[in-house]
Figure 1 (cartoon, rainbow, N blue to C red):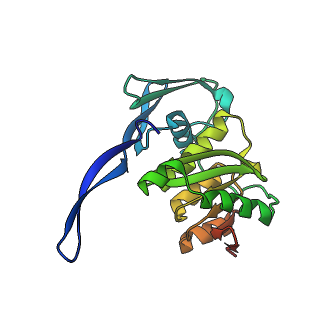
Figure 2: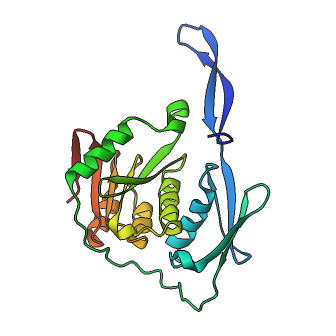
Figure 3: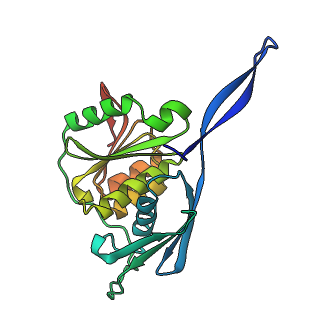
Length: 232
């Protein structure tokens, strides 16, 4: 958590005219420029942890790399950690096909979702002190494999996907549990990563529901320890 947050002060003004100086903790933004073999591919802003995972998740879901760990030779950061160069094998692999395909069929059990919801209900470290982050859980069956936080809901998904790539986890056997709303842009990342199930504490857009149905993704929303809603 060191380096991810900063303590500041605010003036609290009440309707009765009284004022109070209060301390608060805010999440810090971290700019990240991502290159592949020295060529700039994208720039983003995220929180300052799991930067390798963020870079790989961005590149994979953008179709720039294939999502196979053996393709990645090295990940090199500069001294500021604001620039990263992902060195990949020049093996002739064509990653230009960025078309969407239906995700694999996948069985799941309601108890796995409820267990993940219980973990979520306990809160996450940075959110507990800032109230300023989204969170994501990557799980396979009932086992939690990875958790992360970021001020951007999309960033948490990309970090989880990047973690799976770097640790050779088959995402077709996993699900994500996220804190934020499910929008169409997130669904495209989910589909490209071949994730068959996404769960959210929040709600989806109509477009996200349509895309999930079209590409075979099970979408569960308003997920709490005592109830869930399955989008049809």
